[in-house]
Image (cartoon, rainbow, N blue to C red; front, side, top):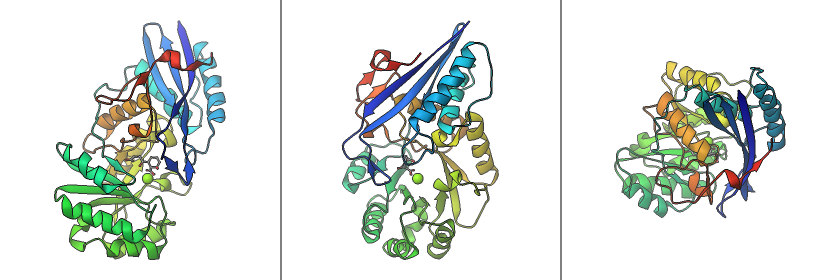
Length: 321
Ligand SMILES: O=C(O)CCC(=O)C1=CC=C[C@@H](O)[C@@H]1C(=O)O
Ligand SMILES: [Mg+2]
């Protein structure tokens, strides 16, 4: 006997969360719950405004159509909509015991503003010290100085940087000028420094700073290829699609000798804990990019170990079926 429910939810965000120049006041999304006899599973469907091509309403109708068919015994293909395919595939994987429970709850601490906050977080971090710093939001020269200062102050630190394509070649050069060449190898990678892929490749060539693709993975002409200066690909499952597709992308990256980093699309704690499991399963050697829970004011259903945020229950969500 199959049964299912779809829940819609809204989580207030921390005051300062800005995505693609838009303030994100709330994170809105859906959960799917599937039950088949004694087995069950949850999945999260939360398209990210400014990054996902689908709206939440598009996702909701694709999800409801699939779930209504599934509960009547129709095992149809997953919808094409990436966030929906991801959420349903997670629920099915839980139901079929195909998503291992072990999780990688290490998260590279994310710094979007004050570097002093990062220094405090890093002091508490045990094991490998890796952090992610957003660049391209302020002056490129300031970014260069901050990165240099962090690398100088903490000798065992490795940094991941992310410019989200903010820089012209000139700005990217201004940034690099302030980073001591001796420290550049401790920049594990810089995600998408420039507006075009060719400019980003030239930046890697000219500065010796390794780059990573993130936004590029969602472009129609993108191919997985090893190229000089390219170190990693950042895989955001909510933007990618089904778990099968995520697995295929991780395998393609590994086959080329590239690092694959599983990264958050600002999912709720339920989705984030599943991403921590996906990371432990598919990219066990790599710390995932999942330090986004504290951008939110609450957790939902499943909690991130050690988080002090309150955790909402099923009653806090709106059932749609
Ligand atoms: O990758 C991480 O370490 C955390 C997630 C993260 O940096 C992002 C999540 C979602 C949107 C972006 O602002 C940003 C990114 O571009 O990678
Ligand atoms: Mg990125």
